[in-house]
Image (cartoon, rainbow, N blue to C red; front, side, top):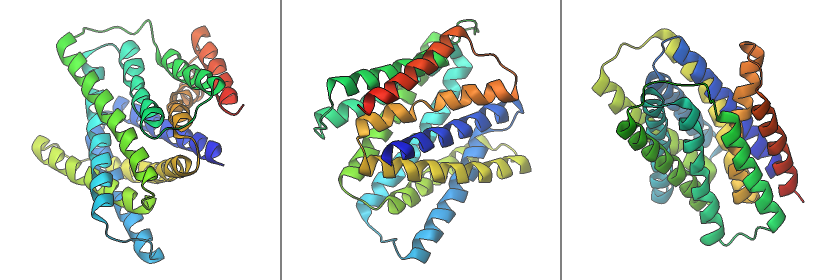
Amino acid sequence: MWLLAALLTSCSFGINNTIFKWSNTKGFSKIHIQFFFYISAFFLTLGFSLISGKYHIHLLAIVLGATIGILNAYGNIQMSHAFDNGPASLTSPLIAANTLFPILCAGLIFKEHITLVQWLGILSMLGAALIIQYSPKASKNVHYTLWMLHIILAIFSFGVLGVLMQVSSHLHIESLEVLSAMYGGGSAYLLITMARKKEKVQQSEVKIGATVSMLSLIGYSCYFYALNTGISSIVFPIVSLNCLVVVFIGCYLYKERLKLYQMAGVAIALIGIILTKI
């Protein structure tokens, strides 16, 4: 079941990223959309927690959750800046390397036992994620120093985020508490960012944000379930394959054709998933 949960997380994140990709082409603010999806998800998780009686105020859960939410929002903003200042062909694969942080943490700190075959599967999925996102023909003027700074900050944010999710799972903290704090912390951070920018909010951004919040809730709920019940060093690379969903939806909606190397990446990803289950 945890493998299915990880795959559902990957699908949810992939659909979300596709919506963000589409919204950028329409000129919508990614910060505004993020804020409204965070605030919507915050009230949904908090409301459900209170109704179900599962919400208890624990300082550690609040600190961990809020930090995860802030890192996720900050990482997304840094990733957007990286795309603005450098080539997408290298930006996506480089940022995808953040998955190595929690994988190494699982083995070195939490002492997860991973067989050689599973390691081959993990490396296959990571390699597939890099291959699928690579676009050799994408080119633009590169502001190297700024680009690298944003890349490093995004990798650090997403990498630490993954490690903190592992920590909350290892400490058996109720996932609803972490999710509520995560969306609350992210909302606060994005609200401050919006106040500094003082950009006009469009009604469509509110609607898109509310839609994304539902997908995000499904994705992160499955994510925590997979981490709590499965092998986290396998969960993380599976989740990183959300780029597959973005590619497939792009092929369907925009009639984009898969490149030969992308088809190879899909095959490698499937082989990787199979190897992790042997």
